[in-house]
Length: 528
Image (cartoon, rainbow, N blue to C red):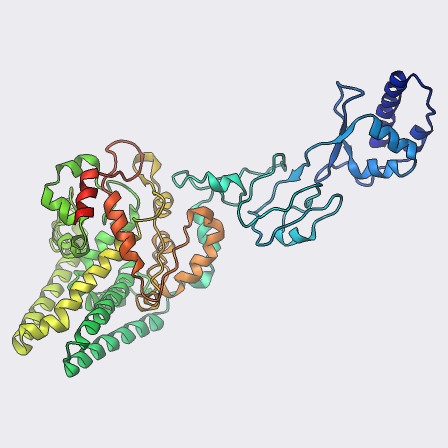
């Protein structure tokens, strides 16, 4: 009845206006016919298109659902004439706000007064789209939000493209607090991804150890200079794979048994000259403070004051390839610039008093492995030891530095680092980067799925891919899809070089900072 009375009142005004202009007496039969219009719904205007009566009554902006006006005009030609003569014109359509980003591969063509079946798969708000005279659009090239968007009671604005559309995607700010919590990401991950299977974990250890000894035996037997370079590349990668399994032991994702984790971790890490507990504790500090300028532990940015205090030799070693790829042994002994302590010293700033016995144990195991290598040098000769163990160890160190650095640097868009109140565990973890390593993904136990690993290091490596896929809808644009790699990830060398040329230091002040470039270092790196 609301629409019936509404139309009667304003159509009468329209007719009087027309009569005054033409000075003619017109019959009111069209208004009588129009009184038969009845609304179909309950008066809702969501998703409908509107007309306005403006020319006859300039102070009145009247909204009438189009489906009811067209039905009224079908009763009488006179009613249709009144509508056209009184300046009824379409307004911009009112769209319901989509509940998820629009993503279409094919162009869509909208037809007036009909629902476009091509957008049915978008699963938008039940109101759908009803609009007219839209041009064909290339949705795969760009989507922008409608000019007028209907708001729903209790609906929250999407932030930074998470569950949003259009221009919000273009204005994404990676430093903005995310619209989700860590618990939301955790809830999206299937429960079985948290289950640790010690038998499955041990099967990977057995596999890798067999491959390591098999490669060494084959290389020693063939003893051919065509074979040795292939052996070095393969064995260096396998040493890196052993490190990743020991890394899982350090996080407790290997099994729920701390003793098993400690024994396996010591055997794996000591065999490649890594002090298990000393590294485990400092790596825990890295995870607990990821993305923090001062408190992060590995490959954190240098504040400008510390950067300016570096001597030329240190700058060259830090920013000129290949020297940064050989930094790990130095880091174990003396940590990063601006920090003091050693992974072998139980009294180091890295450790609290309750951890000193663990550090001593790991240092003893490391010393035993070093002594074993010296003994093997006397037995087989230093050259043979260098070929079987020394060169693969160097390549392992290069793998470790490359992967660790590129998981926190080198993205095509600059990523923030935090201080003070701006830092949080979630925001710091979201600055990490996933990488694709081609054929190496399985060999080094999917360590490239680094974002979810950093947020939830308790998840075993064999569940990281599934957990990442489950968390992507929650993370939205805070997750950055890695570039696809060829079978061998040589492209990562280019990513490393570009980052070394531009990511030099951050400001001494500010709670949200980005890497800045020193032109002199960049020029020298290019010259090198």
